[in-house]
Image (cartoon, rainbow, N blue to C red):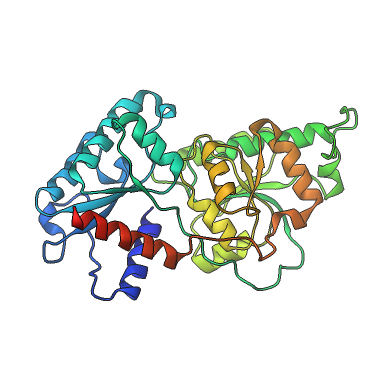
Length: 338
């Protein structure tokens, strides 16, 4: 979220130099916000704006008491939050009430928001995608199935390990024949089981979860690696060298990982959800949808057909970063005119 917020702010400033770039420390008083007291746009998720949902909402309300604001809402609450849903939903209702307008990054998130805010209709501005780099595909790929971005429970690493474990079982000599189009011998045909790789580091507070994931994988005889922090150039290089790019969140509301894979020229294998179906409609041909139960077979097919994991260069990639800036500027103009 912070990377997206920074890139968006820098892009707005580049196209409209009269705008001011300023940082607002969620943990500081509202008067710490730099500038002349004019409009401010915030990117909000309760997990970054306070120690709990209530304090996060209070921080935004304190800023709104001193200056008008709009907000992009990330990680919108949904019933899968379980015991945390009610408190998170109330915090988001308070932010919506404090703001002069709000943005969501997908129709899926907008619908989630409407369900617990009495029909509030946010502006929808999808996460932008940079044009895929035009250079040639690398010769030879690492025998890896990779997920991209911060590691945290629910991101899908365990789901991918389970799928690779199913490939191992399918490759056993006495295993029954697999589904049509999914060779049971995929692991052996491509030099053994692929390594599962997390391209990135653990999200704050989840370092022990990552270590437990390594231990569970080792106990099952599977290979799992986390790269730790990668610079943008190194992340791009690694994203272009893995055999199978995957997105397998349990409950996804908007995915920066998808934009990163596409920007690297990859067509990731994606576990089907309402959000991912929306992205497939928005950018046809940029991802391969599979059901959760079909992930192992999808990985096998991708290992057998590497070309299926690459974009051709003809796919629609809107909105671009410039498109997003223009959409935000139109949103701000409307909010200020109210």
